[in-house]
Image (cartoon, rainbow, N blue to C red; front, top):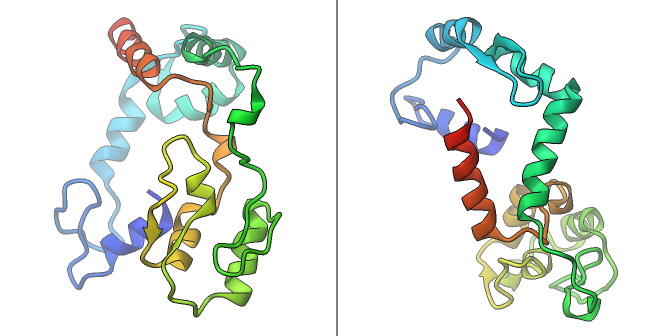
Length: 181
């Protein structure tokens, strides 16, 4: 969970689980889940080494065969890059939607808006979202400042392959889930 979503679950007088909405007791740990993670064995999809789930994350970060396994999946769903780059939106610099000052990187836009426009309630289009393949260039955020702080604390470029075909990616995930144990 990200911190803002987790905080929303803990806000009410009776905090609830972010998944099943059952009542939580603040400060108590999910010991049954911790035990299950500590005692459930799995196999690395790269090197086929057996280990407990609790060790998988650190193993995956250092296993070159697992990294290759992931990259095979990425390559399987990546389209060949198009040579006409003029059809791609600029995802590196953005104008301020309030004052139209230009050439902010994502972090710069967030800082600029926090410093100069934090009290501006005008509904505006998020230039970062509008530049994304799934973005709607006409959608106006009801609370742009909150949107910036929740959605744009990281760069999508770190996590998104813009050349990947979503339908191919889903088919690949389904195939791998059937193949993986």
